Length: 115
Image (cartoon, rainbow, N blue to C red; front, side):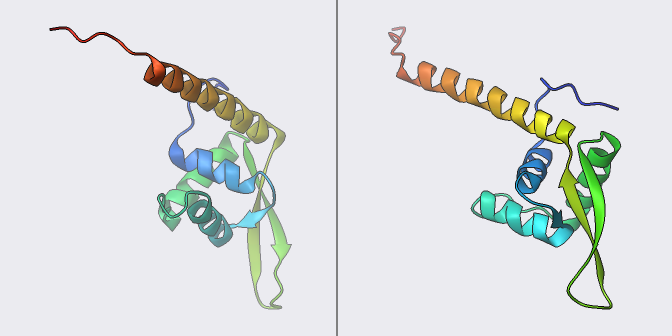
């Protein structure tokens, strides 16, 4: 199932794609990056993360890439944003910029109050 590029992304999806925009990350790394990007205002638990990662992989917006970790006994699964995921993130950024511009314009308007 493909997500239309003009449909708003959920908060979790937005933060996951944003976290993966600059580098491949493992699950815990995504959680840490989301917390950092939101300055602690949005915290994502493992259930939310992995449910959303599965949906994003089904939609071909994220792919998993197995990479060996530094520890010999441990393999970690890393996740990477796909070109389609980057396009969806870009479309969401443009949509949000439009929302912000409209909000700023409306906040500057002064309307007479009905008496």
